Amino acid sequence: MEFVKKVLCIGAGYVGGPTMAVIASKCPEVKVVVADINAKRIADWQTDNLPIYEPGLDEVVKSAIGRNLFFTTDVASAIAEADIIFVSVNTPTKTFGIGAGKASDLQYWEKTARQIRECSHSDKIVVEKSTLPVRTAEAMERILNANAEHVHFDVLSNPEFLAEGTAIKDLLNPDRVLIGGPETERGRAAVEEVVSLYAHWVPRERILTTNVWSSELSKLTANAFLAQRISSINSIAALCEETGANVEEVAHAIGMDKRIGPKFLHASIGFGGSCFQKDILNLVYLCEHFGLPEVAAYWEQVVSMNAHQRTRFVSNMISKMFNTIVGKRIALFGFAFKADTGDTRETPALYVTRELIEERAHVVVTDPKALDNARRDLADLPQDLITYEPDPYKAAEGAHAVAIMTEWELYKELDYRRIYASMEKPAFLFDGRNILDVDALYDIGFSVYPIGRPGKSRL
Ligand SMILES: NC(=O)c1ccc[n+]([C@@H]2O[C@H](COP(=O)([O-])OP(=O)(O)OC[C@H]3O[C@@H](n4cnc5c(N)ncnc54)[C@H](O)[C@@H]3O)[C@@H](O)[C@H]2O)c1
Image 1 (spheres, protein in one colour):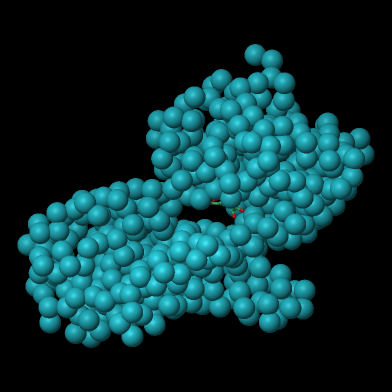
Image 2 (cartoon, protein in one colour; image 1 turned 90 degrees about the vertical axis):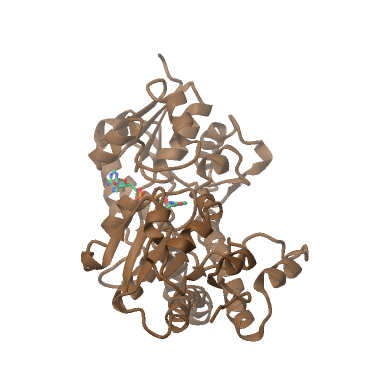
């Protein structure tokens, strides 16, 4: 088949895979190639067992794979034939050198930029899909256009706002698509090319075009604001626990104010995932770099509050369980950082497990989608203190406590009478996601401790 345009995405991860699958399914006349250096990932995308779990992803991939959606490890050839190249490689927090612990590690991004330059023999539009520090596009353009005599690159920013767990829904029906480009004739034409892809299914009024820096900064700002709401309500949850107020009631009352709105006001053990913390720390680093220490300190507090919430949760477990958990079996229900994903990057459960093991508890981890990742994440801990168990009923057998770490629907529907019967007594339940009915569990016999609202203790 003759394709009218060739799109490439470098990076076949949580963003590159689903995003390109949706573009391919909606733009059948466009050839979409997803390339990655991770051969296993590329192989898995071409099986029934996709490398990531997202509701609805299987169907979208099936609708286009082999038709106009292709996966490859041959990044160089894919670059050579592409008209538009999305770069969706990972940009984790730097762990070494200057800016360690805050700045973005741009090594994967820069390698990609250099490879694009080396393998290009025709003009390309290069689109930043990864989340990057403000003004990265400028560096990208300098790398690409150094030594490039006959080839011209237009660098745009098109940050991705999908949320894991609802990625396909978000991609099919986005609140907005943001495309930043240079305010030049060439830049505007390049932006229009990318707009025309999304316009296959996204209403034009939801496709925003801005200058490049605004686009780059909007992504960091969106994540900072979202995470800030979680830390804000969690800070109030701590105060609720001391005063007898109920955080759910407070959230409902303030959320009815249209200026505040009801979303993202759910108290919990805290946010996780690969993005919120990384992007805020990146914002903090940028503010410090640009001589704005007060602004940096303001945003850094969002991350500190999130860490505090996890520590508070574990301290509460220990104090309620008579100040010692040595040798006690604690079942963690959920390991993914949120429901409907297998992703465990920066998951609160990881920190909680580490703290519990530090206290010499025996941790039983259960999760419907994330056990493989959990095994990998916890590999450095003493394995005789950890059990991995797919069945939550078995995980709870003989446990002194169950702690809800992930808000999977499945955990709302379990037979807690059966679970209670199989546990050590007194049986404790710590609900880190506020998804369970405190009164019903108390009536069964549990001592129940949710977040930011009154628990019920049998002791
Ligand atoms: N995960 C999310 O929910 C989300 C949402 C919005 C934005 N983002 C941003 O999108 C970017 C990608 O995130 P992700 O979660 O998809 O990461 P990921 O780690 O799942 O995927 C990145 C992929 O890039 C590949 N890669 C790295 N260097 C490469 C190279 N030189 N050539 C080819 N492939 C290479 C890796 O092998 C990996 O498979 C990050 O900047 C992230 O901040 C993520």
